[in-house]
Length: 312
Image 1 (spheres, rainbow, N blue to C red):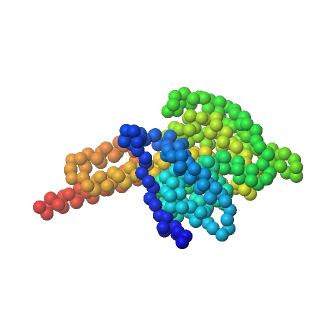
Image 2: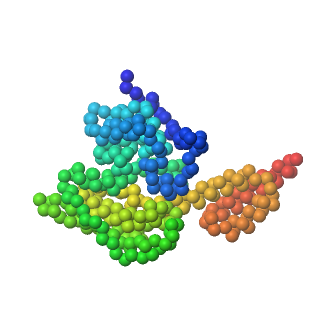
Image 3: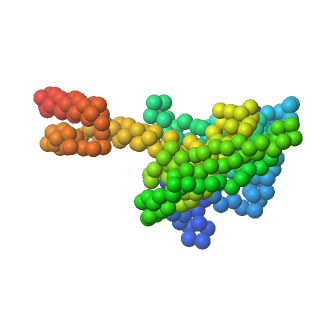
């Protein structure tokens, strides 16, 4: 009897512990962890073989079955623990079908499942991003891809990163070739550092390999220009990183404000609450609107505490 998605509902497994010491492995920095998605979990030899089977099941085109139905319960769990961390069953089904439709293998880092906090939705939202290898594979499957040249860099400058002083390119230009009526035609595109660098807070890989990261963005632009029907509307994870810092900073501030409101609602010290108002005026962590909201929360809490004292 074929298992339904309900039968396969599995929550993400906890991190493995170090067998020798019994202690959990030290956590990587957030930016390193996100930059090395596929390396977060150590796989056993059996699990590595299983990933090959899953990869084949995803990219095989069988009209009579959806990608989800090609996977067993243990394979679903393995995906949720490795390449689709935090995915719900519905999100994993969508991810599998996108991979299947584009013939991309997530275990080869051709496509990524990423969850980030969305302040407007008030929850983590899943996004599917194609890797540069996935981009190349889609172009190659079209039958007209004829390779590309190495990136040409210009306007190098020196910046300060978390890793110290780094020389970075001001721009990178890549030419991608497409066969048109037997002629190898070049499609050129340029990516500029100022437009794609995500900043020091989210740019771990950019600080580590600035030339490689900008070159991938330029190549993505060129591939999309050469193959608009195949790649139009699809963006690589490297291109999308520049949008993350601003969103993350807004989300982080919203979360801080929500936590502050929760703490205020439980506070019982009159002097501390009164002092909080003056501290908020000097704080650089909140915008004007958030400061007003927090001050109002303080006033409400002071009134609640006063009423309780009066009732006693």
